[in-house]
Image (cartoon, rainbow, N blue to C red; front, side, top):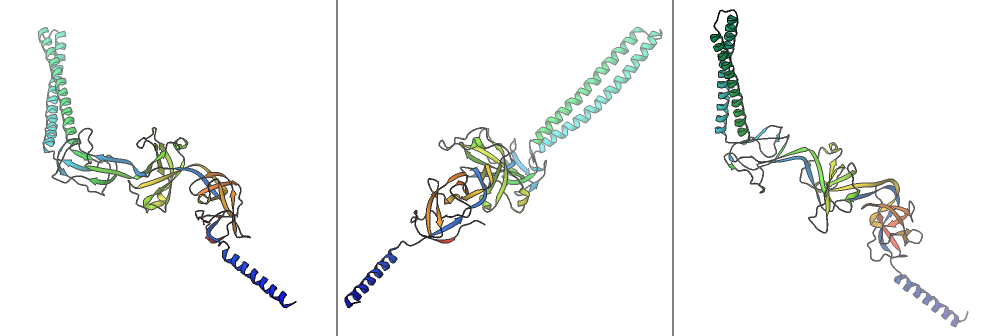
Length: 388
């Protein structure tokens, strides 16, 4: 090889090296992505509430007296547990107690008069019967027998009148006791006192008609709880009582509670004209498993009603699905991704069922929000996005 040829070969090698170097530095750098594996698992079709729901007590009574007056007795405080019929508070009622005692005394007095009148009626009847027998034997005059009969009938009428007076007295006692009961507020069921508005010595007044006022005592039965949440009117027709549901409380964001649909409201709420909803109520199921959690009525809650369920099917995370029902599939040999169309089945916020286009074990891109991603782009895995 001549010197000229040797020089040409060296120059060619240098040019090739420069081209390779330029290509190397200008080559597209792999995009860092999160990959997940296509797996078998459960997929559900569900509907969820459009706005936050509320944890409700099955029984809650906002109690107020039916008459006004001064609070004389207030044996309970907020947080107390009371039994059915237990006294919650009492308005001053000495005058009504006196009227009740007077009615009781009148009953006793009228009962004594009735007893006296009826004893006299019995005696008069026996005398009339005796004179009637003597008259038949000719030993007594007809006039005396008639007079004795009239007296007996009059005494019998007096006995009935006296008994009627006793009944009237009992009715008056009932009126007095009813008036007295209006001053006493008793627990209609066993529960927990949530709120007390008033103190001993303060005056309370009943709520005017049509004007809501704070209750004197707010009583809640915390042994029975459910969630009421608004569902979009479009989704409501598919929901039926008895369907399985899940409950999530904001206060316990990592705990899912099992539930069952108990009621669908028979009307549509149009508070928001463009977002009309139907209230759906869900009972808790197996709440005894969460006895350590203090579930308080009023907590915000969400529900997820399960409409359809496939227990063992091919699925991917819903967040990995692109527009147009496509996913990025990772090719481990080339280190690139391929945009592949898929056919889907059931879907929810977490998982989407795959009917065609993928196989178990395929690895797809989970972090589809990276701007650099495109068909054929080289990628490198940050971590495995598989769920445990």
